[in-house]
Structures are given as structure tokens and as C-alpha cells.
Length: 402
Image 1 (cartoon, rainbow, N blue to C red):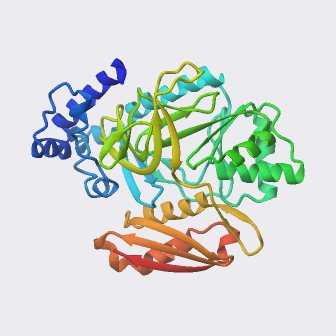
Image 2: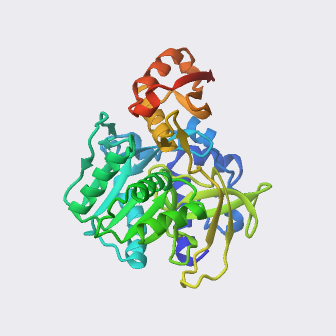
Image 3: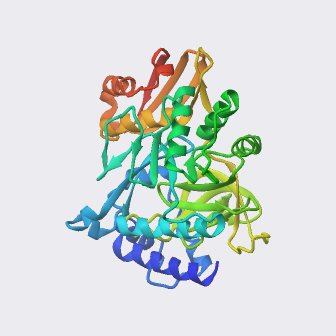
């Protein structure tokens, strides 16, 4: 770890011991001195934080001052789902969030020649203002003169053609989207010879594993530079791909470890464990993500000295295929789950979706114990949140556990 990261790590460790009830108790129980400048071997004595512990301790993981006005008004609430289907909530101070995102923006600007004035188009499923979920809207949302926000639901060929026209009209310079959405867009472009926006010069993919064959097809279709971002709502950006296709850990924003048999390792596969260096409202130390990877410190031709992360297992780039043959990105199902959970007071702890046939889809919900009697209401809310025509005729089977 470089000196800057060590300084940031010392700051966050001291902060959690002084300001976060969960960590003060944890440190005391394990005889850890939160006021001591941490060496790496001291840091590795801090117990891991699991997804279940995050779910069960949301309030106690929030720094003390954010329980009170006016600090409560400075919080942004994030909803996140993991590779294993666990649903979590994480709070960010607006200023911390801006600082964290600026770290990525600075690197993106340097590597891929973007800027704050570059016109960008992002695809999304849900949209919040002031931590409040906005009602579903069929049409795209336009956010200012330089940003285009488009739904990833109901991506018919006609709608994708319309989206490409909107991008061209606005003069969009780069896209930010899931690999599955990029694949659907690329397939439509190739199938119908749709024109690619003339101003487009860069794609940034995130949120799902990017397989080599998918990367090749997307890049051959769009004929622009492409990079991959590994991140999450808990940490924002974790690792960013340079022009040599290597994921460099953003070590001003996070500390990344690979855990195998309970120990931090390099050059070996294990579970990805992340510590936030910039979220002081709800800091997470040694959070076990459920994703798998390998961390190396080999030299990269780009000259960046930050560790290189190779992803092995994370949220897959996958689709539901309807009876008519239409492909629907799994992120559409995640959107339905998110909307359902938002309106059902975050009753769902974990979900699992399995397509057993073209018209046969099973949904498993693990509910918080207090909400086990809400099964029928959750089922109805889920069905009410299906806006994708290709999913409306499916036979949905629901299973509930607590």
C-alpha cells in the first residue's frame, strides 16, 4: 500500500472507532486499538463484515452525527443487490459521494479524454430524487443539456432505434451501461443496420461480468474505445480498466483484499473484500462482497502502479428469453425487485430468480422475520411492477422463506 492509502486508512480506522457504534464495540471485543496507527498486520486483525451483518446493523454502522438533524439531510441512500441476491442499503454523505466519484472522473478524463462537459448517455432502471423513488415512466428522462438517461426496460428494436436517434441528436460522446444492455443494443444495430451516433467515441461498461466474446462483439459493432468499471453502491468505484484491459484498483477510494481460508492473499483466487476510504457516513471495513477474484501487483504497460484485479465471479451478464425469442436483460428483473422492495418497506433480504422454461419463471424471496406474513402483498406488488411486455404473459412461481 502506498503512503496516501496508508494515511487514508489510518483516518478511516480512527473515525470508525470514535464515531461508529458497531465498530467501537467490535474493536473493544477484539482488543483492537482504533486510535493506533494501523500497520497492515494490525488492519488484518479487524473481523470481516458479511452481507448479513450489514443488513442486521444498518443503523449501528451509521456514524453517530448522522442520526441527528441537520446531518440526516446530508445523506443519500443507495440500494444495492449482490451477486448472490442479497439486498442492502448504504448511506453516503453527499460531499463524500462527490469526492469519491471525482476520483474516478479524474482518471477517466486522463485515460479516455472525457470531461465534465462531455455529453453522456446512461441506462437505468430506477430513478431517485431526494432518496424518493420516482414513479415508473415509459419515456426516457433527460437530465440537463449534457446528460441523457434512458430506461433499460422494454428494449424493443424500435425503441433502441429511437434511442440511437436521440443520442445522435444530442451529440452523445460516451455511453455508460451494463454489458447485457450493450449487447442488446449491438445486436439490434447489426441486425437492422442502425446508424451509430456520429459523436460517440467511448463506452464504459459496469455492473456485470464482461466476457471476452461479448467485449469483442460490442467493440466491433460500435468501433470506439471501451473500458470496464468494477464497483458497487457500497463503495462507488473499486477498479477501473486502463487501455491495456487491466483493472486497476482505485486505491485512493478503497482497499481491496483477496481472502482465501480466512487470510489475505495475492496471486491466488479468493473472495473480494473491500474497505471504503471515502465514505465517512457509513464506512465499511473489510466487507466480504461475495464476488471472487485475483489480486496481483505486476507491472502494467500503462505505468499505473495500483494493484491489478482480475474478476473471476460476479453478477453475470445474462438474459431471460421469452416464448417469442425476445432477450430481456436480467437487470430488468433486478429493477422489478428494487421497486417491489422499496414499496414493501425493504422486507426482502435476498432473492433468486430461475427461468425453468420459455414461459416459466420462479422467484424465491427470503424475507425479514417481521414481514413473513406479507407474502401475498409482496407477490402482488412484484407483479404490478412488471412493465416489460415480454414478461407480462409469463407464469410466475413464488417461493418465500424467512
